[in-house]
Length: 204
Image 1 (tube, one colour):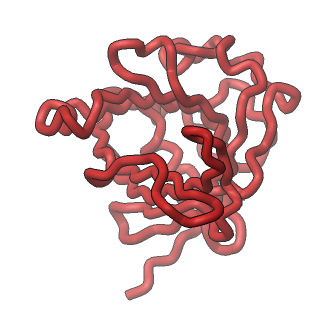
Image 2 (cartoon, rainbow, N blue to C red):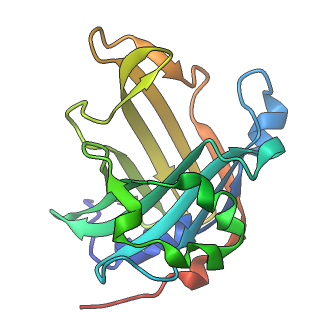
């Protein structure tokens, strides 16, 4: 039976993502391949637009949790019969390091503070009533330079209410060779604290 993704799923997915996530169990079980990673996701106190949900994301090694190696602003919307997560970068990312644990610091983020990362939108659909699945939009256009090589990013992920997994990899734009990313499979995170109550449900 086909599972239909509908506009209210924007809020369900956002509530499931909003939290403090850790892959501690995985890191302890297989430390050569998986560092202990923390991912914090919070709703912006002042949404940049009225449609969908705006989230702040930061990803850090647990031992330097206030120096995240990745930050992003995510705009979770419904379009083309699917959920689309539009990715933005913060122009002054360091000013917000650690803000996933101090949401008030996110209040100053507005449209002038971010730039869209074109080609990096994630397309998401319901796999079943307990799971969402998503991936970067097709086209190999989510590009970044890593290890001196121009690469395109692929992300495949699954989200449930209390867990999510993500496999992020970068491939050479010229040869499609794997340049960076996990060789041992997806990172597996569990939610240690929920911030779902910060997601305001809206209905057209």
